[in-house]
Length: 309
Image (tube, rainbow, N blue to C red; front, side, top):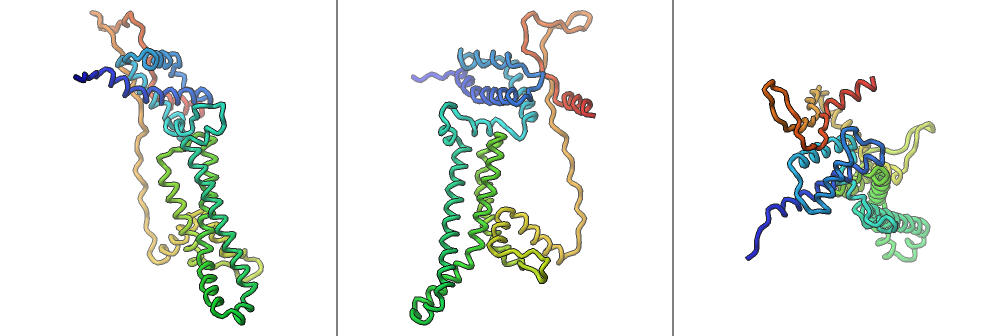
C-alpha cells in the first residue's frame, strides 16, 4: 500500500520558492542593491535546512521568505525571479550553455528569422533588378514568359514593403533582447508578445506605405523610399498607429480623457513577533533566537525619499 507523506509534499512545494528568493538575493548582492533588512545568513540557514537536510521550515521562516520575496521583487524590478531563471546558466564554464537557456533560444530564433527575411529581401531585389534590366528584350522575344514575369514583378513589388517591415521588427526585437540579456530582464512569458510584435511589424511595413505618401514637393523635403518606409514602420509600429490615430481624430471631435485612478503602492507588513506578556503588559522576548524581522516597505520608501530630498 502506497503511503502519503504530507510533510514531504510540503517540503517539495517550498523548494522552488526558496530558490527564487536566493536568486533574487544573490543578484541584489552582485548589483549592490541588497536591502539592509535582508540578511544572507538567515537565507543560507534556511537553504541548509530545506535543501541540504531536507527538513521542514518553520512558519516564521516561511513568513520571512515571503517578506524577502516581496521586498526584493520591488527593489530589483523589472528584474524578477523568472527572468533570472530564464537567463541562468548551470555550467558557467561553457559559453555555449548560455544559448540553451530560454533567453538564448529566443535570441537564436531571432537570428534565424532576421537572416531568413534578409535573404528573401535580397532575392526579391535581385529579381526586380533583372526584370527592369531585361524587360524590353523579354517583351519582344519571349512574350509568354514576359507576361508571367510581369505578374511576378507586380507581386514582388507589393510584398517588398511587408518584408522590410518584418526585417525592421526583427531588428527591433534583437536590439530589445540585447538590453534584456544585459539587465537580465528577459521574461519567457512575453514570448507571445514578441511574436505578435513580429507579425504587427510585418503588417505595418506594408500598410503604412498605403497610408503615407512618401517624398515631397520641394528639394528641402525628406524623401523616403517605400522600402525604407516599410523598414521604419516595422521597426516602430507606433508610427503606423500614430498615423491612424491622426486620421481618426480628424474625423471626430476631440474628447477629454479622464485621468486614470491611482492605486496605492503595495506594502509589506511586519511579521508577527511571538512573546509572553507580563503583569505590567510588556512583551518579553522568547529565549530562543528568532530570525530577524523586516521593516515594512512603506517605511523604507519614506526613508529613501527623505534622503533623496
